[in-house]
Image (cartoon, rainbow over all chains, first blue to last red; front, side, top):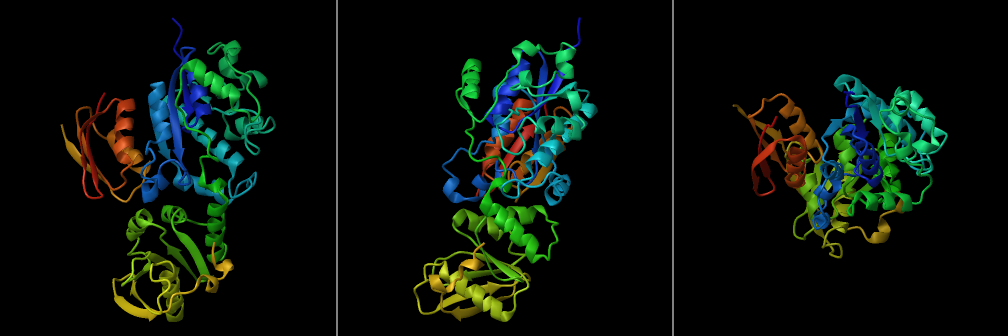
Length: 348
Length: 75
């Protein structure tokens, strides 16, 4: 009796990786999923922060996909290791701060390590030639295979027929004829395949699964590095706080993060011991965190901005409470900034 | 059978799931784990993770901005 082969599938939570895994499962291969958490994944976080998103389903799509497929899913924390990918990507960034090609190489390499440690036979991804401008092109497919160290253990079931044979095909672990030859950006072939497999619910593509593809998020990240004199080190809290609030930098040495709504404010409350905070007293208004080393004059500016984003924005004077990291409190009276008094270049 | 507690407060999904996964690896079949979280997303994610990995959710509690899941480690 031949040995049942085992494949580890990179599961992002999107349709392509779901279809790739299913294609291989249909051939009698044992498949388990793996998902990497970089800290920048759109999946998860933001819906937990913003109150306005509470109506949306809170499911984690990678877990949901694994459950639909009936496979195990291993979620791996790669926050620390991912820093070197983001800070110094060998293949550069995409349109924003997204190091997509290096990211894919990194993840396939991590999957290869997992494969060796867990005695699996090959790796599956949902990549499609021509699907994405940076990481999913005909020219990048061999680069990912080679530079990840996976070589011909990496099988892309959705476009395999357009690529050279891999080890699982040569060895007869999978039948190449039952793999696919999808190319390009059209989603029609994937939708047809989803229908064939009986999947009528799946995550819709919504501009990528990573905050680093977002222009606004990337601008905040670049600003953070610039304010730290080019030091690109970061921790998870840095990454998280770039996802919430309005970010306003009046001077190089200090920045304000102003909550936009209740959910963000509740989330930011958890950082009160790490930042100076400001809050209007007599009017409902946003919580503000002050990052950096503000002077007394800077805090006066911060208070005027905080008042601007509260309901007392048209009042002559507003009392603003300033709480230090040590819990010390003081109250100052300020005139809220008018909208035109906040220069555009302060808004990140 | 032992019962342990995991503090996953202030962590946003999927980190509470990852911490749960890592903790469960150190436990034996039949052991129980109480996971305390502040991200409401765990009420969906941890049970889903348990289902696909063969663990059993014994109890879930939704409190005032705090969520508790008690699970039993499966085989």
